[in-house]
Each structure stands twice: as C-alpha cells, then as structure tokens.
Image (cartoon, helix red, strand yellow):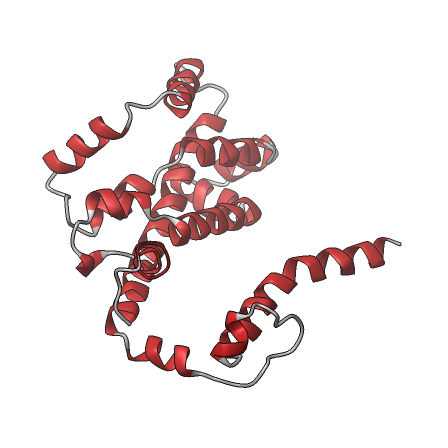
Length: 227
C-alpha cells in the first residue's frame, strides 16, 4: 500500500513537468488546442531553436549561476560562524544574543530602508546587490544551531584535550558531522536564489545583470521580450 501511494504521488509530481515537455515539442497547432496529454502530437523544435539563439537568455542563465554559487557558499559560512558560538554553554550574553537574532527574524525595516541601504553602499545596479543581502539568514542560523547542539559536548572536550583550538574543533569535528544540515541549507539557498526575481527587479534596472527569472518574466508575463 505504501509503495502504491509513493508511486501515485511520484506520478502526480512528475506529470506536470512531463506535460510541459511534450507540449513544447508538439506541433504548435496541436499545442494551441491544449489537447496533448500523454504523447506529443507531431514534432517541432522551433521554440527551442529560438531560445538557443537568444543571447540574452544565456546571459540570464550565467547571471543566475553567478548569484547562486557565492551566495550558497557565503550562506554556509555565515550559518556556521553564527551558530557554532551559540552552542557554547558558557558563552557570555548568550541569551541576549539569541533574542537579538530572533527579533529581526520577525520584524524587518521593510523595502524602503533596504533600498536606501543598497543605494548608499553603492550596490545599486551591481551584481553584489543580489549576493550580499541573500547570504545571511537568521532562520538558517537557528536551524544550524539546533543541529550543532545535538552533537555531544564530549567530542568538543576530547578535541580540546588533544590540543585542538576552536577553529580546528569547528572544521574537523563539527563541520564533518554537520553535513546533513549544511546540505539542507544549500538546497534551500539554491532553490531560493534560483526562484528569486523581486530583488533583481528592484535593484537591477538594466538587463545586463538580471537573472533568468526576470528574463522569463519578460517573456511570459510582460510579453516585452521579442523572440
């Protein structure tokens, strides 16, 4: 029964992607009727040829990858550096630091202060405007802290007795054991950056540095991209 349910859920999840695929390679006249359900009706790759020739699409793809890689690496670094000290029970003002992190997680300055900050930092219409604001997440720091707190304290003490300093304890003891949560945060970050478009629309007025999602928005929503 569980196997049947898993297969059914898998088909429900995969079919929309399969439907888009067969619709994209079907004959345009048949695709316009929206009656292609299981197999392609005819065969036509003209849409793909148009996209492959569009240099703006490739530039948008490159921009998106440019934002994903450094943002993910910086997100992992900030999560580790923010969460690891909070696992030390003897850390001074630990309670106040946790409160300091929780408050801005629920309350933010809003879009206008963020926009003014980006402009004052000289990041407006620059690729760093998509990387720096997205490389820090209090929620991810809390997730990382919860996972690191589950690692036995005895491992830290054993490493300290063996002469390891705080950096060696972090890199050689905690990081190898934190691979599952780091993988989860990496997936969250990659998917989030890949799907993001609003910040790019606000901070990147020119198409030179705009990501793929804004390109798709111009094609599918605004109908301003001439293919």
